[in-house]
Length: 299
Ligand SMILES: Nc1ncnc2c1ncn2[C@@H]1O[C@H](COP(=O)(O)OP(=O)(O)OP(=O)(O)O)[C@@H](O)[C@H]1O
Ligand SMILES: [Mg+2]
Image (cartoon, rainbow, N blue to C red; front, top):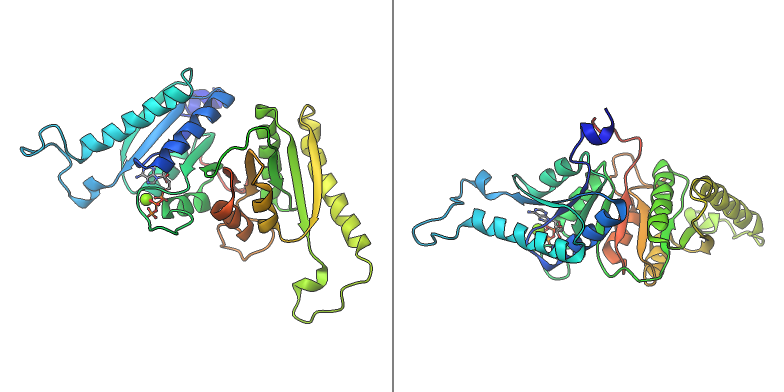
């Protein structure tokens, strides 16, 4: 039995809450489903029954009620998906539960989970909604967050470090570049070693050895993916600077930014690294967050 038969729901999943951001996520998800040849499942988490609220029609609103509203927003999302990609099979699901928990469960066997960066709630100035924060931090499935725009003709930008997520992110970025026939821009940043400590030793007069080592590491890391995806055109870029800021700058021209959920730094238990957080908060194009491949995905 192959994994598709075992998990007939293997698909692209998108979460909707009736917001414009979620509709943007639906359109992005429809394109992704078409690129991957998968079905699209549109999911709305319906929390009201848990709060003992009457969700049905009433005498006052015989055609209405919260359940009716939820079904309508799902139907609107399905219409938007089919208008974007008429050939993609679209299904909708109204699932009782809290949004993050429902989406994480729905995505467990999916190829990809797509979300908007914002939703209906939150306050102006919030850079990323709380559902998006929770889901990107806990998902064992890659999460694509719709934000900014996919700059047509731009590269797929991937941040390269030497963590397990970094390797998974590079593979996901190669696959994305291959699907989109786009150039892959693999970026590694470095800073002078002295900057990392309080007892700042003098900056070495010659940083060439450090730079050479970094360039070598970048080339090594990229070479595995390049062997598997020979048709992808790759450009390697070594930048002296901070990774988060660099990725955000490059996102101005990119179709997609790909990051690992967390990198080498940070403490155990930290769910999302600072670089992925900066990309999710500030990028000018959609961001794909790739989880730790060692995280168990329940069969
Ligand atoms: N009830 C839900 N069902 C399915 N998906 C949802 C639901 N709520 C949010 N989402 C998904 O998460 C994305 C981000 O929304 P989120 O709720 O995080 O932001 P927000 O509403 O602006 O902030 P907050 O909810 O923290 O006040 C939405 O665009 C949508 O894709
Ligand atoms: Mg919300």
